[in-house]
Image (cartoon, rainbow over the protein chains, first blue to last red):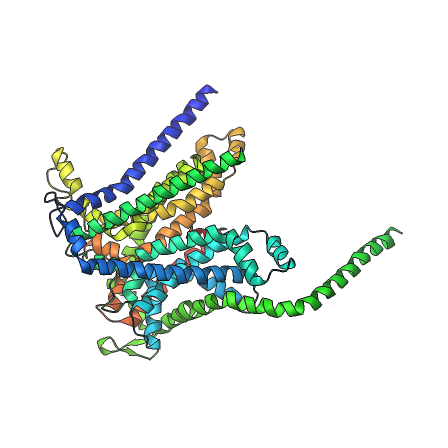
Length: 272
Length: 314
């Protein structure tokens, strides 16, 4: 018996070592990215010495900040539209019955089961056929289409676990549909909505394929800017910007973990 | 005797049901109009969106794939199958073949690296797993593209890895690590591994531990247990991981552009080219249709195996 236990222990240690190695491998490129934001070379392929000048340049580069805020703005608009439509759709389609519903619910999955480039091409053909000028509106529409299934699926997952009798009880007690939706359904599916919104936001922030097919010459997002630099080398300025965003995201994650931990502890204390 | 009593018993509740049902119908007629309106408001936007921006574009894509290419990127609206037969020309067919090879290697490596990772994660506390998941996703959330460029820095002839190997005297000349299928595959695995781990992890986590114990009690050794119990039962998770890697892999032209350096080309690059440099939209559309059909076939197999499409959005 003790022998067996020891064996299981060995596996566990091996597993944890594997996990740590994988995390190190995943973070090695991140470390390189951060280190090369201090590289004294515009082409940024080989190490040419330490400098912080690209951080200084970054803060004066109004063009790059414009691009960054355009990207952020598009991501926010897409997230809001996608989350609202996706949530309403998930709630509505879980109850409604109408002819052709199966076709609609299946087509919602399309953007995640076909490659992004196919969706991008199809949408380009549609906008072109309809004579729509490409620009921020088409980028937004394309990205909303991409994120809708994610919101739909995460919200649907919460709805499945929900007890329908609470909604019925609310309506039996005289609440109208709107009140029931905002006061009973919404709080219940909120984690799904937040997860969907978060997923949408991070997807759009880094979206290249759909955006590059549906953009005009003037609208440049960060991924498009980065892609345009691939051949000549991505300048340390971009690394500096990504480093700042990465550290900010890291900080947010840590804050989130600390807050949830504190809430958990408080709940436990209250329970005692 | 008993027959009658049974009948009587069944009739009585039935009668009750009818009256209750009638009441509901009377009461419900007014409500059903409201219910319909609320359904229209809730489903309307999503339905319209799906029709306008998913179904119609897909129909137009299929339509375009049968059209004829005119001069200077113009489209002649005349039915043809040339775009599909063109795919079998050696120049293009090699790209398709190479894409499939790269995609298969990427998928294989991702699953082989990701499955054990999922197993390790399933043994940890829920909270720890959550933190690890966030840690794995964070680089890709911030900017996959910029971080991917690190591979150019690491793998080039005077890059981190080559200079390290030369410094310790293992090699004399730098290895050609960049701008080939190797670097493309490595980059792809990096991009998709964190996403592919999640469905594998959740299928392993959901596995009933008593089944493994039962297998052990019946005398199976751990290897047999793994191949006869764990692996088959978690196969939907594995297949979800496969789909999550395979689908985007063929289309991610930027990875090949960055790490392939123009030497390797995927179907994604070929499609991108038809819409930018070559301006041959019908051929690009035909390629897109074929690519989608290959992937839809995989998705059908996945759902037939008992996989849930919802798991793909993990």
